[in-house]
Length: 301
Image 1: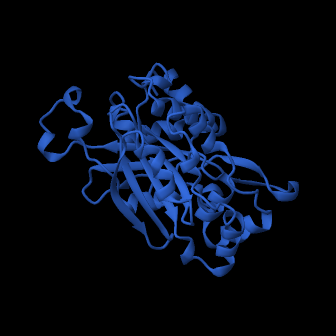
Image 2 (image 1 turned 30 degrees about the vertical axis):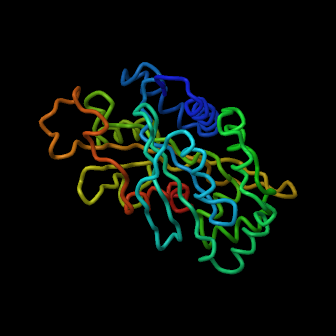
């Protein structure tokens, strides 16, 4: 992804993406195929619609802590989303400039879990007595980027992970993966024809061996029909737990989004369309299904 300027925020995002792309083989696989197909010339031409993070709703962590990083760099908190069955809340954040991606931050409502699950999570997070973001120099891009990769709690036991997995696959993902970048999103509508339509782009993806999340269908469509989203199934990582026990678990994945022009801008040519002319924000039902890209049912299908 290419940014117009080298601000602290762009440096943070570059560092995050570099680590994420090494950890998620599908990223380079997709980019390489897009270059070979002549869709783009390099990764820098791919526009990042949004990136997403998962957090735990406990004292000194969660959304109220994590969002400070982005609010400090000009992002604006936007719409609230609630996911009843998954016990999650979320907000999305609008960037200060159009070359930056939107941010989507979700939070597990830990108090809504069983006592056994709560106890596991709190046994790892109760030692965090202060908000760790408050201790960061948010203008130091290296310090902030390192924070995303720095464990805030001890490695869980494999047994703890598996107990959480049975009750909340989201909880299990976060207790091991922590604040790793959950996914980045290719802005499909910014690609050249015919790949600027998600249906066509998905055919391309499947043709290069990318497995798509089928929960709610390969394409998840908003009620107004203006936001369409798909995602790959999370790449598997070999995780080492407490006492050196290992297990193959879900890592991160790639999302694909197509935002249609708003009705009042349908007269504009594609070359005239800007971000403000297209459908903004997110859709609860779409996001609910996208979460499942890291779920066992998708990984093992």
